[in-house]
Image (tube, rainbow, N blue to C red):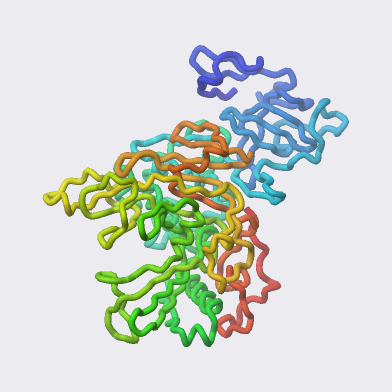
Length: 564
């Protein structure tokens, strides 16, 4: 049988099923109900709890191509619950057990669960609605030298059920690969990422070495070739953008797109929702991929001239939201709702940031405001905990904001900013600090409409209600820290991923002052492919009378939504 590295919790005999061998491995012991066959395989004459079995397992929403060894825990009608060697549990169809022959319900062992038991561990029920969760196993990642920033982010993505479902299908990935796109990696990163996700979703291993993925990453982006520490949020931005370009369904040279001038007159005549949809249509001429389908929403940006009051409006896509954790006065914000409201507050454009007004035909003071116009199925929120200032770091937890202060994610190319940076003129050197206060938010039921984060003018097709399923946490200070991930997968339980080590996490300790990147899944299950051909799949409320939609597909012919 397969050998398994022993862990401190698994030493010695375990219920008479396994023994600790001299080499420090766990050796399977034959169970009476597993009968050897002439070809070295096994045939299950009758299933019962305690059997050692070889069984296919879930990878995303599909069956694995190979079997893994495990222990039969329960018989649930036509399905069985299996514990695999790495500690993961899955509920699978009974016919996935190797060598199993169908038996009558009367032949089930006494005490087995009825056939109405939950059909799969891919779904968990919360407040009466189904939450889609990844069914991946409890698999750690080897730290290759300061790669905790990468490992934590990868564990969160492996907990994104929609991504696992997509990347588990190698035929779909190969179909969508765009190796000729010079903005990507030639498809190398996407292929290795798919392979890594399959390994993390497997129940075969306790720890996976991401060396091949790291090499592919370094080949595409030189800054990842060494062992420097990087910011996990900046890495997330790079990786998602690289995967998007590798899998961009737009082939050949991208079209040159000219976005319309959204003056107050145009918006009054045509309406904001139409112009937002028209901008989305233009965006899809150049960019459409599984990353767009899952992670991308739309922002409205409004800039108003302080002199003539002329207002310019733009609609842009976004892949994540970077939200402040203090207000303009430097006061800590206590809840995620407050952070989202602060994100939408007016920003003064003065000094070097003055705006060129097309009416005044000169640079002027202006006011800028961002609004979330359309929300994606998977919402990635970045809590901006790192503050860069000019001058010597102050001892106060949060210093007052002023004109010399800026909010940034740490530089991708340079690694984390460090407050110990040397300078000939120390008083003017850029220094940074981490804001370590707790920002509270619930694990379930984040209603963006209730937080005031969405403008009333933008009606959402589905309720913008989200549930948390993954977090990247940052421990330490600027330049000297460590990243871990906390992820909720198929069994509905939270697990903390600290490189190679995976441990259970209480729901009460999931959200802490360490939270840095938060992954939320919208409660409706549909993930619709974004394409120009089927505007009714867009997040906008479509009016068929809009002239730019002439000749598009009838809504009755829109493909059924892909379920995670």
